Length: 486
Image (cartoon, rainbow, N blue to C red; front, side, top):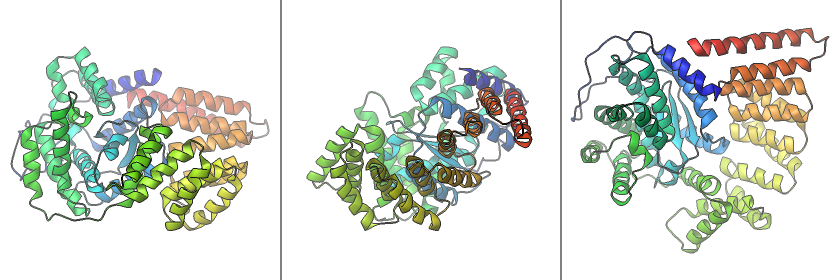
């Protein structure tokens, strides 16, 4: 794939810049680890870190099952930003995204990008446990652990370091693949560089727990989750994916337990939003609709300790996705009636109306909500989608153009806008919008091809549009060159 080649070329050239030698990091086991977050600034300036992060994010979009689900994105971003707001040493904006993978895992990389496997929320018992892993990953970023690892590799060749970072990228998204890359190209000792060091894990545990507590979550959830992972090691041949890149010696679990005792344990009420997100993941991403229906019916029948509202929500989704509309409608309607402002219910009610061939009714329903919450991605994107289904293409285009002014890099919004232009038969605008989508994946040459196609549909008298597209064509070609020598 051309993008992968460009990615390796970028990393090879980027990492040839000289690095300054600093004292090697030493493993520490006490609770007063120093803040080492600025030690990597000499090796990797912040602007370089953000540039690498942007390219890595392009690679992930092009090669991994990134989940484009506005409801889950809204939930994850809300929790993530709550934690970031209570973290120290935040140097740039954070972004959070989902990977559709049932394994327990989360990972952070250059530039404040945090990826979360859907399996993490599916196997977390409560919101504090889920947030504890996010807090840990945020700490890896604020303390610049990847940058510091690069600093420790200053004696290696640039190509070796570039290959190592490519391995890191593969390992955090699909750990088995990352191990294969390292095993095939380097000695087994190099695999240790794929994982965070013991001192880095201790630092992330310490700072992440502080962030978790500051954000109002239960700090004891960190030790609860690590204990849960340790138990899985005992009963499974293959350890959870999270542990392939986050080592878990026995001392780490006990250290985290002891550290939690510095804080007051919080007895928090059950989070409905967490449970709804968990049910949505199980129903939409981890099981077939038929299997999900059986799963939720079984738990409801057993009157288990699970949140019954969330179980009904999962059941409603599984029925809706099987087109069992007569069974899904009363469940989903009752949920919306109980909480009309809940984004999870608004989303499924929209899906229900569209499935019932009532797209115009969905547009009216969402338009009223959009007036009060014009920048909310769940309401806005559902409204645009409903407008497309109702063949109200001009409405959809206007909504999406306004939305993208606020969130210019929103991938799903860009894809919907391209679809809207195509349905309008506005081929010049369609190809231009398609170019924007391709640029999100770093496919600048293909984006340039789309701009060239757009020029073919511009009328001769539309001189300003021609000039703008030609300028965009030049820009994309230049960005391809910059990608190779960033």
